[in-house]
Length: 291
Image 1 (cartoon, one colour):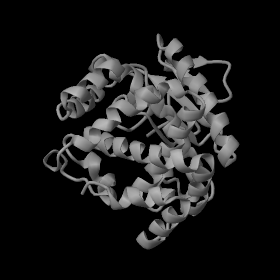
Image 2 (image 1 turned 45 degrees about the horizontal axis):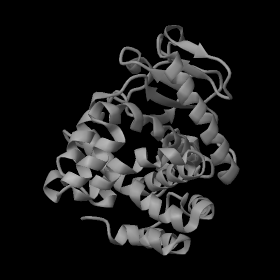
Image 3 (image 1 turned 135 degrees about the vertical axis):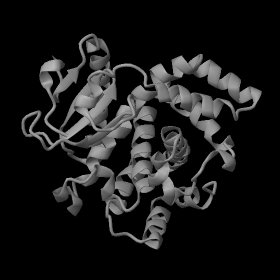
Image 4 (image 1 turned 135 degrees about the horizontal axis):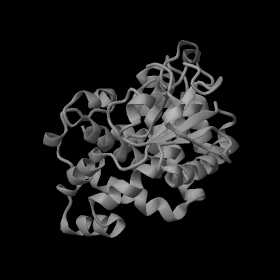
């Protein structure tokens, strides 16, 4: 896409990275920026430096001018090599309001919950609107973790998306979810219920509802009609796997994961052996994945 037209956005001052918002979304952008600053400090304390992103918190009208991703409200990071924001090469994009697909995600999980599970979900979020308003904001930490993935890989030179630097997409996403879970556990533990409750329901979704579900097919999920929902189903299961890993190996496991799996040329056996060295629970996640 072409350069971002910053004249349509409001610059939010006072952060360690450029932050822009749609008019009227300044307060939300500041809240996103504050969490992002905490997350960057936490991540760099464990993993070392990462590229500085420009952050955008935008409404549906401004979204197409900031990103080519067609799914409004899906947080993501991407390359930005058009000189829009000085010499920065990365951007993080968030919705200024909940994307409608989040309500579809909620309904998809809700349908397969038993009465006890529905009561838990209702207690955590209230309803689909409540879920859509709070859950996506946690994903800022996941997305910032992706910025670390290109720092030591040769693909940094070709402008590829950062998750290409791990050998498989699910390996990349598990890393980002391990970072997300660890950050919340150490910095914002009161938000763990918000993260976990909806994710617990992902394991109840039957095979008939998922056109693909093998780990290595995660990259294909957005090809389908309900692709955003299917992609979130993968992420929810990976988040619960990340919880199990974090609770056993913590910061050392996150650092080891980053150092040993951040190589795009690893074979399946290489990946499994690396996971085993990090923690047997990590390899068990692969073995027990619901095919």
